[in-house]
Length: 575
Ligand code: DGT
Ligand code: CA
Ligand code: CA
Ligand code: ZN
Image: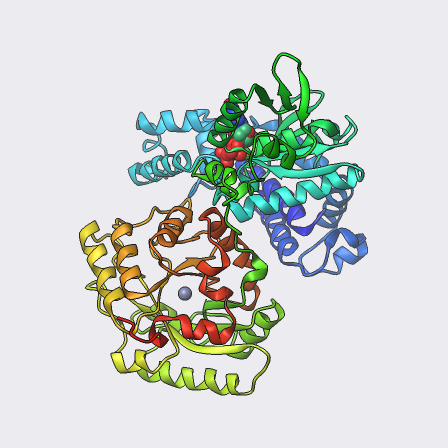
């Protein structure tokens, strides 16, 4: 039981007490306890009651409760509270802007138990009539419900990845001899996942029980002998299927998808007198098994090279596999540099040297320090003077040859009219210029396209950062003619960034592939704001792989000197 899980139970106790309108001191004690648990540097589960009580803010009751949670995965008190309310009431709490007080009022006054109840009441105008609510609150609730529906049940890939990893390690502990693997959209590296699909091969049937007993399971949605579905805390749904050793490859292939890829593969099998399903590849009529244990053999028996999961979207991968022409996809290990990082000089948390050391520890050979420019005032953006002083400091550290090379760059804002935020001579004096849009997102498509085209035409621009401005599951890309931008980037030798911030992943796989097809170089950058961010290069790499990128398409796979020679400002005859 980790601190986060303990905190979750404590917070839920506080929420439920508040819905019950209990003593405010008691509520506050549990809420404080939850905060302490989530911020405590050491494992609370490892402490006994005396040890717990030594922590300021943890009294006798709370200590006993934490011990109980640590030992049994839950507290009796928590279960009793949950039993007092319809189980759906916690869904209401997860809505943006709806706290326990609101839920309590809705439940008591209008008997609202589910999201559907809530939506009906809001649409009928019954919420505004409640004391302390009003039309504004009602509108907010409708908006939150709408957003929930739009992004219903989807999760950022890294969140899905973490949730799956924790669940997989739980299952591996229970069945060390089994092979447990994620499949579905998670294995294909999609930027969002609907649910977590897991396969277990060579596991005893009891693994299904271990699965539904996992500490984060909130509700069991279905359970059979060889499969089960559950709802996890945090809103994830997870599916587990047990498969026999001789159909492991077939099951992996089938449940990895995508559905469109599977259908094409199945049709190909039929064309060859074969039948493909999750149990294997069979000769029709004789019912003999042609393949099933290994994915490679299934593809092989269909006359195809094995296709990396990231390509299984029915985007030409089957033809390429048949022609032995699949790309050699870029890998995390191919990356040597990071071209977008921030420091304490603007809104980063760590200084130049700390960032450089962290990059080195992450195995990188070079980074560009690209702090913000002037107009991003809330990030303390740099004017020309500060940008050049900062560059001098970056170069001084680089001159020490500390084991990672540094480029003195900038992330320069593209102003609403397409001009750049810093003077030309300043931009010319730097080693690398990334440009990005951080304002006026609501321009119309033509304005936004012209704006970015104008920036690309600027001779000192090397890379466009997070081109489309999307925030995954939060806000769509702004209106933009990406194709026109890609063509301009190709003409001017400007690279496009795959930004690795987990909710950006911008450009996305489709745009990155378009860029590759039109000869635009790409870079994969962290946009790190702290020393811990270099690990997220892996998410950008998945986008790159889904875009069919090979190492040669990605400039930061090159050694330092070759990278430097490849950016626009250093290329002879660059436009
Ligand atoms: P998601 O969960 O929305 O992020 O996307 P997936 O691709 O993980 O979809 P999911 O979980 O519904 O199904 C997992 C895989 O199982 C899917 O990628 C392909 C396979 N699959 C599911 N339903 C069908 C089907 O009706 N026909 C075929 N051929 N394959 C299916
Ligand atoms: Ca799935
Ligand atoms: Ca599924
Ligand atoms: Zn940035």
